[in-house]
Length: 175
Image 1 (cartoon, helix red, strand yellow):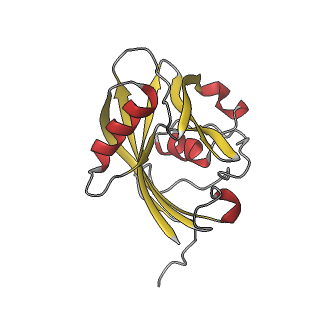
Image 2: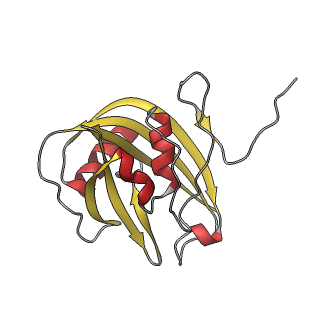
């Protein structure tokens, strides 16, 4: 099983969320800007780098919203990768400097777009979008039109709005 650690940004401006369109083989969908950490890279540095690579915008990282831990099964993993993938996704609130969006060339995403929050439910999204919106307190129960890349309806992490680790497996409370 492969392990992937990545950092992502929830960027909201005037009722719109910054999303990127991810495509790998037959899998695709809209997701939060961000991506994998390089060896020795700080997650905050990684999210700034990834937002710039995918959107052309300079990000300022804000509050840590939470950490999402998830094991993906064969049908959710791109062809050619290990059939099981454990992802650790670190999600931050971020802002960006004004500027035109620039689509990534030869990367994992092919388009960047500001999407009205009310329209997100009509898009094919990866599970990370709803996870990030819940962590940021912006989630409205909307259907996730995702196919294989993710699942809708995961429970929010933490209690009382505090960010916390989230696991794909439920643990029994200790007595």
